[in-house]
Length: 408
Image (tube, rainbow, N blue to C red; front, side, top):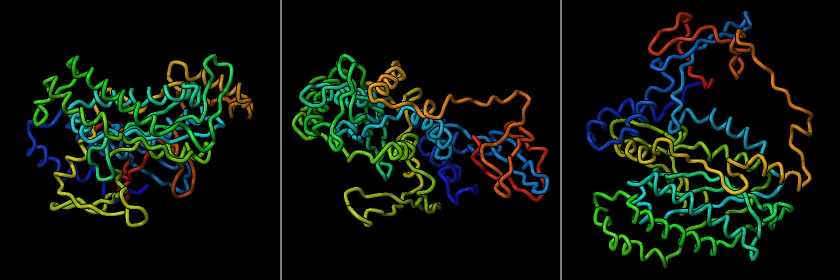
C-alpha cells in the first residue's frame, strides 16, 4: 500500500512544533502524547520489520515501520476495527437493527469540553437508560433490548459536537426471558418520548454531578460553579427540544457490519479527506449536513494552528471507553443473552451451521507471515528481520526505499 499523499502526521510534523510553542502551558499531557504518537507512527522512530516474498523468483522486499496504536491516530484504526468487527459479526441476530443518535445541545456541549469524562459518561448513561426504559415499557415494546453505543465528539468540520450513535436490536427478551418479543420491522420507539426522557435524565444527572462537585468549571464558565447560577444556566433546556434522531432500519446484518466498520473506530478526520497543506492553511473535505444533495460536499481551509486545535479537541481522557454495550449486549451477560436469543429465534451460530470451527495453531518457531500477500506475485510475505526503535535494518536493498504497509 502506498503512502497517502497527505496525512495528519505530516501536518503535525511540519506545524506542530510552532503550535506547541504558541500554546505552551495550555496543553494537556494527553494532547501532547497524541501529537507525539501520530508524528512517530509508521516511522523508524518506532522500529519495525523487514519482510520478503517467499517466492525466490519474485524477490520482493518491504520495510514496514511499527504503528503507534493510539486510538486517535488516523492510520492505526484499521486492524483494531477488523478485530472488533469479527467479534460483533458472531453476535448478529436475524432481526432488524436500528440506528439512533442522541445529541447534546450546544450549552451542555460547551461545558462538556472541560468535563469530558464526567459529561460524556453522563451522555452514555442517560441515552442508554432512555432506550432501555422506553423499550421495557409494555405500552411500547415491553422487552429488554440490546444496544451498542459509540461516542463521537466532532462534526464534519471537526468542531466540538458530542453525540452518541447507537445500534439497537429491533426486539428483545421478555421480562422472564422466556420469549423473544419482536418489534415492528420499520419502527422502533417513539422519538418524542425518547427525547423528553433523555432531556430529563441528562439534566437531572448534570445537576446531581454539579452538586457532588464532579464538574470543573473555569474560564468563561467559572460563574457556573455557583449552584444557583448552574440551575439558571440549565433552566431553558428543560423546555426546548433535544435532538434524538432515529434513522431507517438497516437492510440486513451485512449493512450493520458495514456501518460499524465506518463508525466504531473513526477519528476526528481521516487522511483521505485532506487535500493540501502549507504554511497558510490546511484544506480538507467536509459535509454540510444542513444541505441535501451533492451541494453538501464542500471544502474548508483552516490555518494550520486552527486545524491542529480542532483535531486535539477530540482527544479523550485516558482509559475512557468510547464504545459501550447495554441491555442484552452488556459485557457481563452478552454471551448468555445472545445464546438465549438464538434459541428463542430458532437460529444457530455460523460455527454450528458449518460444523465445529478449529483454529490453526502457530508453532513458536514458525516464521511470521504477514496477513497481506506479496503485491507483486501474491506469495506469502515472510518476516526476515525485526529492528528496534531508531535502528536501521540490516536487510535493506539499496534500490528499495522503506514501504509503509499496514501489517498490524
